[in-house]
Length: 199
Image (cartoon, rainbow, N blue to C red):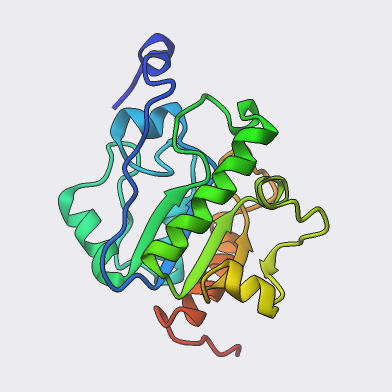
């Protein structure tokens, strides 16, 4: 599947439905949909995005979603049955996340907290440290599990909070293997995959 630049631009501002079902264990949070994602109505769908290869490599999913063509109904059902959900800080599509304003990210952070309170995932994994810092005013935050305090537990409705690397192809520091390892850690805490013992 291919799109011209003009065809993709037609999807600017479009939204992609959240993927969420009962028994939510692990909620992945993107920054906002890209134009390709909006076109195929599948989160993290750009051809260079490594999200679904990393999910498969980590054992979170049993197969790799064809992100270029978009999710099938069977793909969606598989993720929901596994207890995996996907949403975004900001719901509308742009060509790049850098086009979002600070205000949009802050409002997206408030939206996410409401979403978590409603759906009650065991674990939340925000994909993108810069967006997380901006959305929640946590300038000193680093990747990994975020410190748990009484205040944070209340803020996140009891969910454990992780910040994981952004799987975008623009994030050249990461590979499918490093992303898989980063995503496996919150998945273990959520009870999706077993603890992997080092050899």
